Amino acid sequence: MPNLGEIELPFWQTAWATSFEEKDKDAFFPSFRFSTTHLISVNTVLQLSPKALELLSKLDDFGTLEPNWDSYDAVPPNLETINAAKEFVLMCDRVSLPLYFTAPGPNGEIIVELNDKSGKMAEIFFLEDGLTEILTYQDEKLQETSNKIDITPLLKFFNGSSSYSLGV
Amino acid sequence: MTLEVIADEDELWRRVPDPHPNYIKEDNSISSAAFLTKKGSDGLSVNLARLSNYDESILDRSKFRLCAIDVRTVKRLGNSSLDVIHNPQPENYAHCLIVGIITRAMAKEMARLARTVSAPE
Image 1 (cartoon, each protein chain N blue to C red):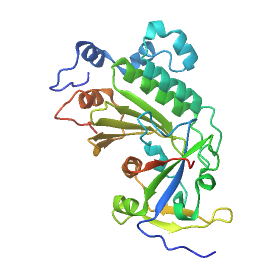
Image 2 (image 1 turned 30 degrees about the horizontal axis):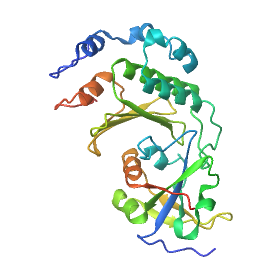
Image 3 (image 1 turned 90 degrees about the horizontal axis):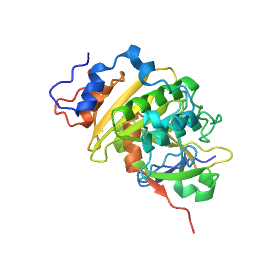
Image 4 (image 1 turned 90 degrees about the vertical axis):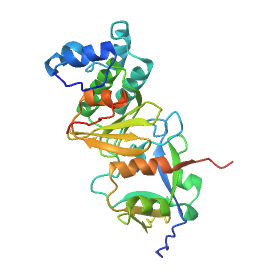
């Protein structure tokens, strides 16, 4: 069970964070393998935010990119990377993390940006080799980096923890 | 081809995709993806603004926009680890490379300090 530390999360976020386990992922998020069109059609069940739907639609579109899509010889993201980013967007939306933007990078990586518009932001890199990297910023200053995607430290960060740590 | 001396005051232009995918966010800030380097490349491709013009650099207004950043800012962010060299190509004399390792954090900072270039009238 994740250690939620000293901060107080909203009831429903705490309930989610303390009950979620990796094996439950498919039960919680069964739809990330489907297209965004399917997600929209079942949105009455998932209750996705408009921003999540926007990012999921963009991520689907990344699958149509051709080689050299940026004119500087960029590689299109592969399906695994796209699905990993979609899964993350769904998880973030479930706990109301501030989804903001997504873009592909030149090597086939995908960046998902969280931004609360009050000085805190995180860039999550889904790399073409399946690895991940998270960079968090506060007031434009780099705070910390981690290679492990864990929702709980991100929740703490965006909920104002003074003892923020990505727990590397 | 003659190599140009790059001054700190020089401005560099980088093409960024827009609208599919888009590197310009809804608040008009630029994604750090704009300044990430491709693995195995010799550096980050840019054009020296004074040797080029908007249409030559953007290639296709329907697919791209231009971002500008000055040489001094690049060098300062790199803390002496980044440099800009003239790297003329047969079809593009204005081509330059930002050389050195651009970390993801540096790319983010470059994106924050860059600006979008408006299309000429």
